[in-house]
Length: 202
Image 1 (cartoon, rainbow, N blue to C red):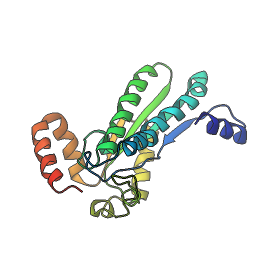
Image 2: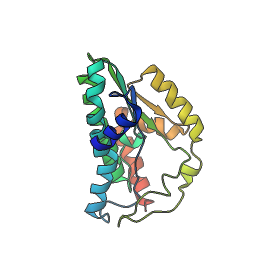
Image 3: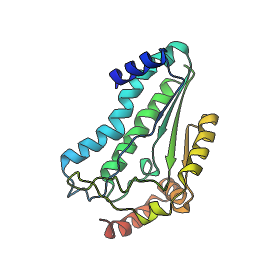
Image 4: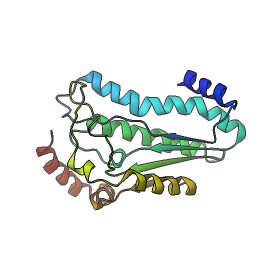
């Protein structure tokens, strides 16, 4: 990441970045008991360690100017763990832990940190998800196919970035918003829902 950022600096002729948007990631479709450890490790490297490494490369420039904005495209699964998505959910939870803590550290340095949590968005995420052995899942989930159009998500995300929201859930599906509230207000109800969902999992 540091080498890649250095290359960008050379190409752009600048030593700093105004805004960094982390939007790379890979999802999973497998039960934890079946998933090879190497797949868990790989997902964490892409979804968590990658953004952290790139942030550490870019942050010094922001701090030297006392200005900047770090944006993380996380997921509702960074707030709620789902069955058959354990590695993915874990990586997104880790992002929240790191960037929530970083936001507090940077509060007096004029560098904003935003966590944007999409619900289902109509992308190729499930097609490119990995299975238990690390191969390509290759199937379009019904929930993804019916998800928010990516153009709509992008527009709402840009509005949240302009406001410098600390955290926001962006989802058309009511279940995403309900799930987040249940997590805090009625966790036993959410657990019951997840148990039912686990019976239908991959």
